[in-house]
Image (cartoon, rainbow, N blue to C red; front, side, top):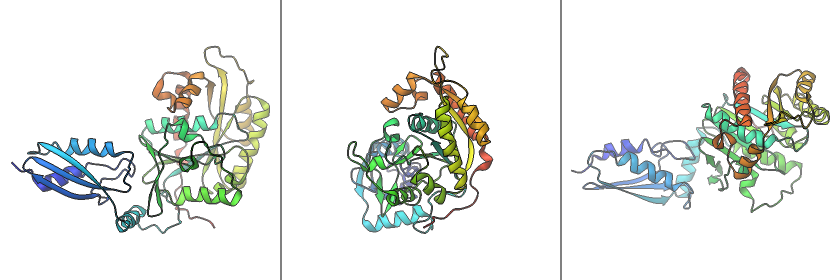
Length: 360
């Protein structure tokens, strides 16, 4: 019995590109389907020859095509798209959107995670918050805008380079998370030595040339302070929201006020404040004082979204490249971050409703 070709093609509609999150049939990636008795050979054209997620295609094709009546064996062959096919794919992904316009939809909520100074755990919170939001069903993208101190790739254990399809950048994925960082383009731990205009251009590319696809929330891990990137984000996304991270001590709180004031001056709304390293887990000891988060919230007229304890397990998980909730969902810090994600979702009405355009 020779399997029905239409049934095979119907099964291939269930095979989803793990990076683009769209069916391979919709992306015109199916180059050929051959059936010889019960043996079926499927040829898929990839965007690049060394696609790091080839195994996902293999598993999906085996599962879906293998379930078609009459199929006894499945062979998957890979080919590479021609420049013309890549250009057509980029046009399809852009959906008629002109080049150099924002690649995020008008309903995507943009939340910048900011701080007045370094060392308050902003990037660790961003990585774990992204995982918590994704676990709640949100489709999440993460921009590592801390150009000089990029650490999101390491904290989430993602190191493959992005795929470029006719000048469109396909962000690396981790499960349902989509990530973009300058760290993906650097060799080893090379330093970034850029001046202001280059920082603005990098952020602009992350928001216009990256194919974010269908996401609900875009988290932006901001650099500490009130420098060029903060100004650029305010220009590019004037309706973005800001969550300000501080530690309990007055010195950190006073500096964090500046980050909040900066956000408001460039038109961003303060969604709330997070007090990190509030107390040491297991003892409740307030190593860095107390009350800084609430004081900051009161001063900038925002709500205190949550307090996250100082938990060695959080640091260990970040060093291992995994969110803490995947290691120990019951850890105090993991529970606190899940609650923080729920509080942020509860403020959803402030999501962007109007399409934005890149400002030159």
